[in-house]
Each structure stands twice: as structure tokens, then as C-alpha cells.
Picture 1 (cartoon, rainbow, N blue to C red):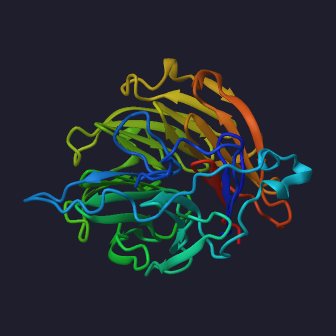
Picture 2 (picture 1 turned 90 degrees about the vertical axis):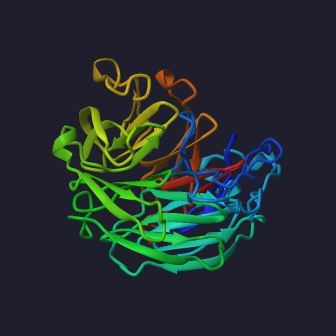
Length: 403
């Protein structure tokens, strides 16, 4: 994967292998200073992200050292020239802010503790992006499962006292890393999961949601795995919920929102399921639907989005009944897309090669999704598709996992 920053009107871009782009105006002062920004979700139902989940966590027993009140890193917040915002396809270079960085195989970008983290395919790296034109790699970590493992479609974060953790997808299950010091990420536990064995959309992991002291894992054909993470350095599997118990929905990206767990499907499948997780270790199926095939699902606000084409369902107003007669609230066709991220009421849908970049879509009113702009990626790279995105203030990170 390669990544970079690019520029897009209300939210700029960083693209991958990886690169960055910008917008015409900075966000409100302080944008990007929060520790779990960007691709992290958890807690309030109107939060969302680009694939990551998480939330503040207590370690239990005695006073906690909460650590610094500010993140270590700094997310840039500055204005850029108007010509950098939404240039035409012919002038695509004007929208690219950073150089392409890294030629390793990654997937999911996220912002954690003020830094950019890139995750997937047995590795993750951390970048300081205070100067978005010259990001600096702080560290790179390799999973013990090695090359060949499934892509990193979703990640989890948690804070236990002053310590930060991330959960990443591995070939046999998940890896838990301590990332308190971004320059020295440390693997603390690899967890093998029943039936997971370097698969693609079966026998694989496509989803991780870390809420409180519980980690939920979307294990595709193997179902939903529930881990007790009261000790984040030694989580244990306490339950596996087979797909047969929730309508045969293949478990991909999943999202814990309070007492509700929302499960979406990986590619070659189409479906949504909801669970009651009032007892975090005993998910109770509430409803499930199957749909026409979707590449991947994502959650934002109160809604699940499947694509392509883009379709939207309300899953939180009544989790026991997914949508009115299970019909999507709206459908929008913007061409072939794969991975979705969200920021400030907008969706960024990453496109497939040979048309790299992303579509920026207004989802303030999910019943009336509207295409706002087409963000062009790196048109000079053979086979590039800039599928993965995350908005960072007025920048957008775009990363491509083809290389």
C-alpha cells in the first residue's frame, strides 16, 4: 500500500501507498487535537469512522493514571490555495499535498493520539503528520503471522489508564499491540480464533470493535467472536456466535454502539445484523436481513451503508427491525467503490482502479445522499485505486493496497 495527502473542498485528503490532499479552509481551531479522532468510533450513536472502533477504558481496581490530557502528536489545521481544492481530472496533481509514502502493503488508515496509523497485511506503521507535506515515519511493526494474512479492513483502539492499545487483523485472528509510545509499538498478544485461517471472505477476520473491556471480532463464515479484554495484554475468547444464529449473515466489519452491536458483511455477501450487548459477553440476536451482494458495509450516525451501489438502512431507531420493510432508505450509484469513511456528515467512498481517488458524498440526510465532488487520486500510478481513506481535519488520507 502507498499513501498520501490530498485536498477536497470540505475535507482534504491523504492518499496511499499513501498521500495527502487539502481543503480551502482549515477546520475550527483545535481540529484534530483529540486523541481518538479520524477512524475511531465508539460511544455516542452519531460518531463514525473509517473502519476503526474504540473508546476510553478503565482498567479496574484503584485510581488510574489517566496520562496526558492532550495527544502526543499534532494534526495540522491550516488553509491551502483555492486551486488545490477539487481540481479537474486533468489537473489532478494540484490536489496532492504530500509525496507518496511507503510502498508496503497496508490497508486501513486511522488517526490515534495525534498520529497517523496505517494498518494491514501483517504490518502497521505510525507517522507524524504535523507537516503534511513531509510526514515522518515514527515506527513500523510486523505481525508474527507474517505475510499472506488477510487485509486490515477494520481496527480497534482502547485506552486503559495512561496506556493505549490497538487491535489489528492477523491471519489466524487478531493481534493486540501497546502503542503508548508511537516510536516503540509492542506486540502484547496474538489471539488465534476458531476457524480463522488466512482466508479471504471466509475463514478470515474482517471486523474488530473494542468497547469497554470487550473485543468483538467479525470472523466472516466463522461468526462473531467475543473476547474478554479486562487484561488487554491477555484477552481470552469467551464466546463464538455462529452465523446460523443470526440469519446466516457473514460477519464482516462490526460496530459496538452502547448496548447495540451492528454487524455488516464482507465482499461476495450482502446483509446486516443487530445484537443486544447489554451483557457484553452474551450477544443476543435482534434482527438480520440479507441483501443483494455488497463489497463491504460501514456504519455512521444511525445508519449502515452497503455498496456498490450505495444503499442505506437505519439500524438504531429500532434495532429489532432493520429499516422499513427492510428496504434501503436511499440508493446512490457513483460507480465502482469499495471502502467507506466518514467525517462531519460526509462519506468518502474509495474508487477502484483504473479510476483512483474517492467520491465525496453528503450523508447529512441519509434519505437523500448527494454526490458533492470527485476527488482524483494519483493518476500516474499503474493499477492504483486509492480505496482506503480517512479525513484528518481539512485533509484526506488516501491509501492503496495494490502494491
